[in-house]
Length: 261
Picture 1 (cartoon, one colour):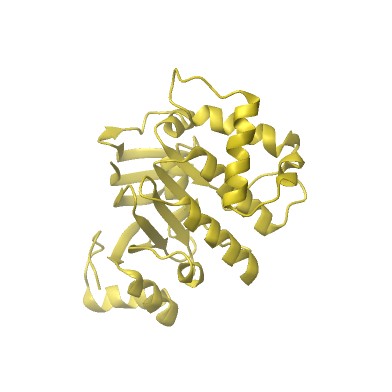
Picture 2 (cartoon, helix red, strand yellow):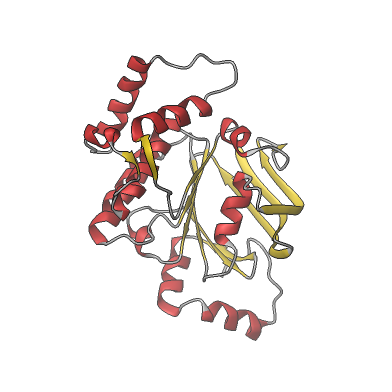
């Protein structure tokens, strides 16, 4: 099964941000999407998940060859999509346990019987153990008073429970110190598997030292302009994103998806 993004154009408040994005992710694959601020990375994440602020003007988003552009976000979740936010919101009065149970039930196929509260507790306990997390975490309000690392670990716990076919992780490394980064990266590695295709959005190469992508893509001005292997991320770390712009101007090559350095 594949998540296919074909010639995707999207606008925010009338301004075009995505200008023809092409990307294919298979289950079991890990892709990294890198690029400078304002290149369209987070816009791509929200557009794929169906945020109403982001309007698709042309192109397709396909899961197993079915176009999901017209579906609401909750329907996309049922199709197997998951988004980990760069800035998870806090909700006072809603416990982590209640939130996770609602998210888990919503992700199940239509018509399936939700687990009892006792069955769900067993499922959560298993995932907490896998991620080396304390069960006291579940009694706290959703992200209320959480550190940056705890918020990101809560996102990975949600991903572990929902077991999506395709996960988009929007700058999961943002705001994390070295220790928190390593812990979150280990969680991603434990949750990932042959049934989950992942798109890891990041500015920096540092998280890719722990989460090893098979494919690395560079987004610039609303398009994916370069694709390659892990060595591309190291090259960007060494030379920076201004090099990409200079490289394009020097070669006078129009942006093309999938062209490898």
